[in-house]
Length: 196
Image (cartoon, rainbow, N blue to C red; front, side, top):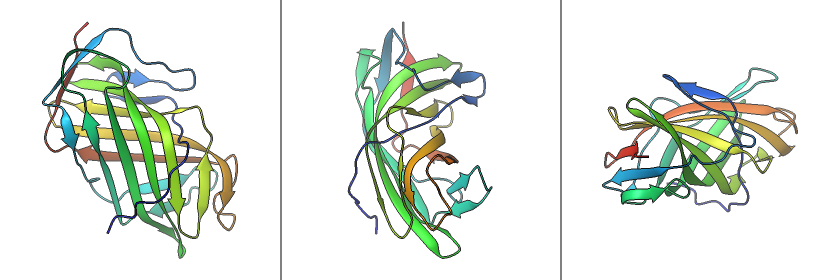
């Protein structure tokens, strides 16, 4: 059963690319212009394959039992790029050498651009929470990056997070970068486009 763990401020992501659409973080801001979303409303999704987090310093990988990405989009046309949706990314029972964590990261989705069938989002951190033996927080003020493909209905979350504080038996330390790339097939399917 999903752990609805307490959440506090989220982070991260820099320099991610997907099939011709490139986004960067740091001073990232939502794109100008307007957007169209149909049907909008609530969505659910589960990560394909085995979700993982990699500690860049050591190359060690946490493998997770489960991950989901769920929330809601606005619906309609001529929508401003800021606050197109809200979602929570859950990661449960992520484990290495018997040390585990679970996370719930809440984000706001801002439109960032489009290329062909793909649209990009900056996922602005709202809250984050972690449970388990391995506890850590991300540095605040950065962004997650997401890419949604209208042809496949898949949202790819491509993250590189910098750890701010850590209590994880030395496996994760403050200043470490954690990377993860996970694909989520949204249900129901959405059609999202930048219209101006």
